Image (tube, rainbow, N blue to C red; front, side):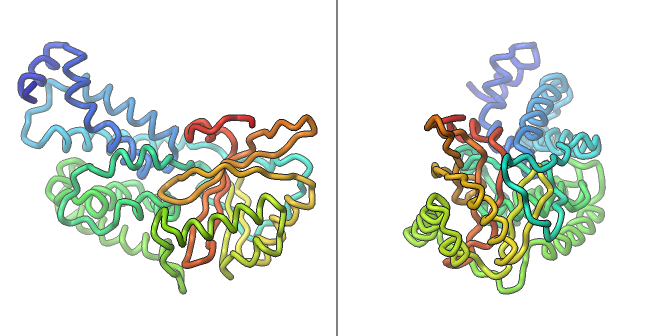
Length: 332
């Protein structure tokens, strides 16, 4: 059915017509909200608020911009409201049984960070992007990129994502944010500087291509070392400046020695792991399971690897609440 006919039906209160109009944009809007908020759950809430606001405000859609642009305006402002509300996931105390962690080398700022399944992200890969995009889609969903966005001021994040990730023209972004083109240009310059300071470590080497034989080889070595509690083999895979974080716990360890000490504490506690491969944020990941005396393996969390050349430059560990998002069971 033509968009105009569907729009008329939706304005008359036809919910099915509204869903048919908006469903094609649902996945890409979900990913947009995730970039803005850094939390999969918060993004789902913002997405629901977006469609509710769109349904209630459909009469005000005048068609001067496309329906997609109008929905992005609503979604962006829902996310800005969510960031202003400061009701973020709080930091959690150390909760790994029988393991006493070493003193952290630093404390994480973005404790509300959550992973996003590749299955969802890949569903948005076909979304149309403007000619002014500066980032590959996979790069713009990486944990490092999303984490850096959370540190920037909210309006700078909105401008950077809309301009550099999605490629919307400055005039459209100014209308979405009820501001001027000059204000958008100024915010974008500041956001680019802030992002560059957060995401361009010295000596960074590009990772191997996603799902390539080179990536598979590194990931397989990591799995063998982790499952066999071989701390020597694990440390050999790490870059000198590797770091590990574990939101919502703020503990972070930076440097090969510190990360090795932390992993040694896990292995020395007698915990034996089974790893189930998956993918998150365009990166290799594993659901982690610990064997109980009964033989049942209980899901303890998800580890996402960041690769640099043929080594691992970061490990991000999330708690077991995220496993269902990846189709992983709570026990094996």
